[in-house]
Each structure stands twice: as C-alpha cells, then as structure tokens.
Image (cartoon, rainbow, N blue to C red; front, side, top):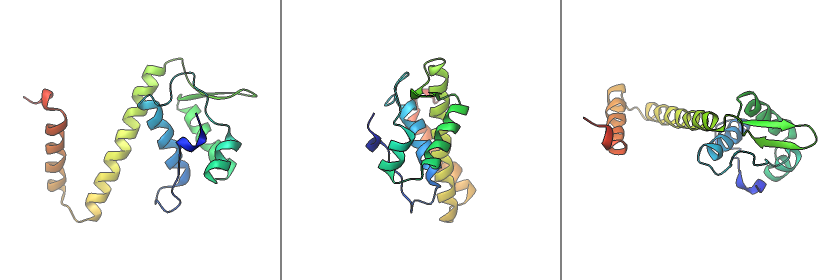
Length: 134
C-alpha cells in the first residue's frame, strides 16, 4: 500500500496520531487493507505525511496492542491474519463510535438539545436500517 493512501490535517482539531490510527482502522474495517497486507514503514510513512517517526511508531504500537496489526522486527508491520474477522468487526465499531461521538459533539456545540439529537439519531436509524424497523 502506498503511503499516500493516508493523510493527516494538522489543523483538523484531532491529534495527528489519532487521525492516522482512525484512518488505518477504517481501512481495515472496509477491507481497503486486507489480512496479511504490509503497512508502510514507520520512516516511510512519517516522511510522506511529514510526521515525527515517533508519532507513526506510536500509532503502530497502539494498533498492535489492539490486535489489528502485527510487527515482525526486520520484516515490517502487517494487518493481522489471525482473528482478522473479529478485529475487522472491532475496527468497524471503533470507527463508527468515533464518528457518532464527533457528530454528537458537533451537535452540542451548535446548541442542538439532547432531545433533538435523540430524534435525529432515531431518524437516521430508521433511514439506514429500514429492514430492522417493526
């Protein structure tokens, strides 16, 4: 996978390591990164994204701790094959949790009330999960 697949926004509000972690989890969750696929090297990705290599190393350590990637010294970092289905599911829910949290935080900053947020969420659920409505 080319490093250009990922990007970070220094003015995006979220810490750079969090942005990159989220992007890699999303790529795993949607299958853009498949089990066994090699990630860019820490140095290569840091150079491409103009990040400190320690930032990329931190991202890789967290992803390894979460069971999403595995690192083999001298060989690189790879999307885990063992338990990939469970980890992909967890990566998907992590990404969704983050997106919903961002949306709720934005709604609150705009002055949307709790009851209005609940109504918005209920409408979205009804729209995107019509088969599960009674």
